[in-house]
Length: 168
Image 1 (cartoon, helix red, strand yellow):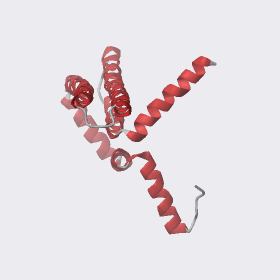
Image 2 (cartoon, helix red, strand yellow):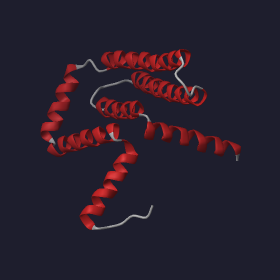
Image 3 (cartoon, one colour):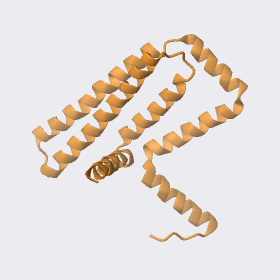
Image 4 (cartoon, helix red, strand yellow):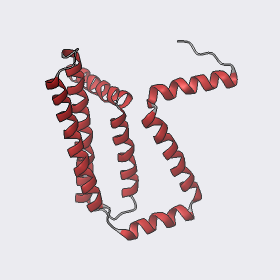
């Protein structure tokens, strides 16, 4: 039973980070794009392993950064240069992980023929192109508004359009 509670708390932490940290939402959307893009490349099992580990490293760094920042906020109510430095260092760790992820991505996705294949695919299947645009719009709102704000705006829109009231 304790193990199930541990998983529950861990999942709550991940959900909190996705709901409240814009950078984590950016990492999530970029990761989704990278994994979709990877389908057009002839990546070996080893290259996919590197890709998954790289994405995991960036996301773990972001979760740890959020944890450190939250902990510092609890114990440091007023401005403190040491607290600021700790937050900056934690954010720097995410930047390092993200920078290396970009570098690894450039190495893994350097095949120009795969990009030509992507363009041909989007031309042959206009519905896929529409899905790409829909994904980009969704990603924009998900990243910059966040799930809670999207939910609130959707409720407000439905209420205004249909006259439906939601219980609080």
